[in-house]
Image (cartoon, rainbow, N blue to C red; front, top):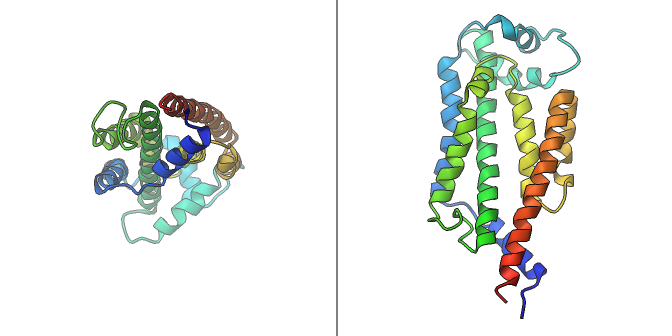
Length: 230
């Protein structure tokens, strides 16, 4: 007798609900801490001319156009710290945002690997056909490849950099991966991205559509595998 798709959905949701192991949590911490610390180590008390607009928004709280208003809210808690100049403190906000984006990206890659493992019949925490400990390591490497890149690190050490926009895009896709059956889960981060900057919103919507397609493909692969086992 073939296995129903509803039964497979129960297996899939049960796998997604399993708590992460200590090894998973360590890899998550590395994916967040390494890019954040790398940006902090290279942050300076003054910034380059290319990021003058970010300084105006975060430090001077001045008008720099209708977009990127969230930069001031994110940087505000760091401006009261007795460390370095105000420009350096605003740069700390970008570094912490980079760390959070690295953690979200890790969770996204981890969910994708788990879906692929379920489709191949492997243990949910593993890469298809590989030991279970390889999944977290691959997710951490994939996250660090993005968060330690020149583009991310340049914006992560600048006041009012583009890291908040990158976080909103990655967060939107992560919400789709968390609820692959519907795009409604990503409505709030997509709306926030649109208000942050139109191009960030467009990138967020496009990434969600692609992510929804990938999630549907992995779900179909998982269903075909379990139905063939009946």
